[in-house]
Image (cartoon, rainbow, N blue to C red):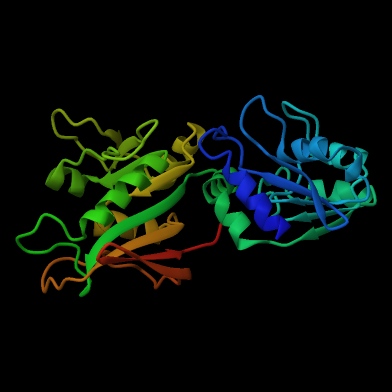
Length: 314
């Protein structure tokens, strides 16, 4: 339960934590009682572990620290969190996930164990999912890519005589997804056919995502999209270096298949509408090999069903 509470606390930083940092929450428990809580709130605030330990004070000595991510062991803007944990006299650390940064991975746990602190790594799916975009960005040097598509029950992405495949509630959810993403991208086929805006409309959005068109172009006159004409791997690496952690892919079947074949899709969101089309394209062009999916879940969104699955876990 204390790790679940730490995950809840970590969410308080969403929207304020800078893109180079993960969400982190921490809880200090002594003799079955929560004596300190903390979370990382963004630039200028203490790390979650330090905040929780300061709240606990002397009661942290001999206590258990529950934290959603491996405590840092390096000097950044602040001293290493492992030093604060050891100095506070914490006896045991329970961590939801290991830091995926290749330069950090496991070093925080090693430092704690060397100091005599008992360490348990839960490898919580919820903890990894909470920071899925940051984990891929920091470990693979590219954005976390989500492919979103709406299709009919018979697997078509168009319905004759209708502009929309999915319902109004699903379309609103897509705008929410855009507002949560650093960038939204389509292929040139979609650009030429629909001239999409790719903005987040009708929902709360503090900033608009970068709007990308993958392909050689040219873009239609007056298009406000950003052309990304290079190889997909190179373009994603550039975007990651430019601070793009998450990319929502809304392209057509050919672009989706290209990303999947290159191993560049992490997550699928499939809105299935209760309609039969009888004609038209499927959601993917031909793939060279089958793709196995993980963590399949479903939820109702209006009259539609939203299926979520992972190509690879973060």
